[in-house]
Image (cartoon, rainbow, N blue to C red; front, side, top):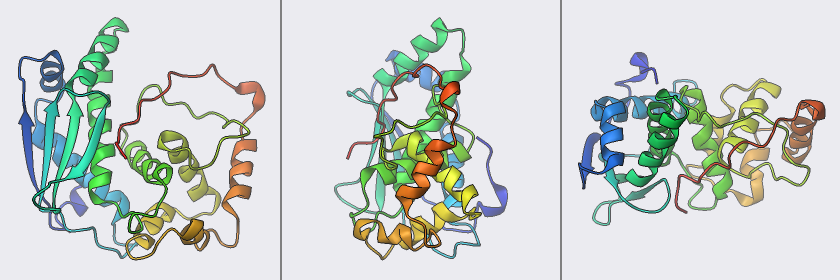
Length: 254
């Protein structure tokens, strides 16, 4: 994931911390083998998020965050982000070392060791979005929140190897979440010639509420998101459908 020097010092940046509860765990060893500079990993994730959502054109400021702790420990799932119980300006990114160990095992079996680095960087970037994004005072649907996070992850060049740009099912909602919604948001930005659509949407959610999607409709130049999603679906050739990829595991606890 490439750092973005011009934006790096524009906003006050949080202090970055790491906590590893069991350094002998296979997942911890895999983490440090492929992310030997956790400070750089976290710093580049912060830069990727601030550059994507809060650059000069947008005009909004990120929420104040004093401290980000990356905590490596064993739990079911992949990762989640929360605030410290003592201070809401202190954020915690929890990463499952069992998940990292599983990724490492599959990557070695496939002779694709770079997948470990890519997944660690990608999951941390995704979770860092949750540290800095706005959520319409808690009213924005989870699928939109997760879609924005994976839009940033893809933009940072650390999308997951199993992701596929494929035609959504006829009954699939546009806000299904994660990379599926992230790819739609990317297409939507190009379709409307609004490269800043996603950061503008994020900024509108700082003070406004979702209001059944009204906050998004204001940015769509009179179009309905359902109509645009049908156009997006129809842009895929049915003849080019690939075999379903592995189902992605959610990376953020609601």
